Amino acid sequence: MYSFLQYAASVSPSPVPIAPPGDAAQSIGPGFAGFVATAALVIVTIFIIRDMTRRIRRVRYQGEAEARQQDLVERGKKIQPDEPGDKPAR
Image (cartoon, rainbow, N blue to C red; front, side, top):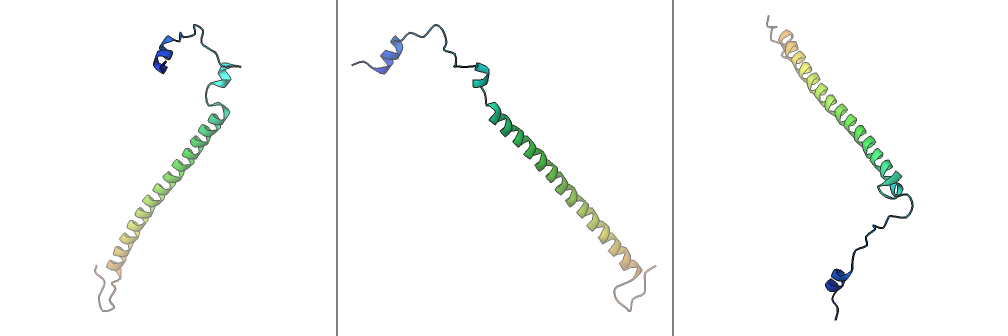
């Protein structure tokens, strides 16, 4: 009985590597489909980053606007008190 390892050890390697049929530059690599997939990923990533930047900016401006609104409310309370019997503090 002849084992696979004995057979693999007895086979001599080919001195000349076998080249792929046709132009080797076209048959190796991802090709056009890989280029399109990579380009699509890059474009989607750019849009996601732009959207994230807009959302972060909107949240920051919203916080600043709320702080300004609160400041104006506090100033208004000093000028015109909430209760009708109180006199304005000057």
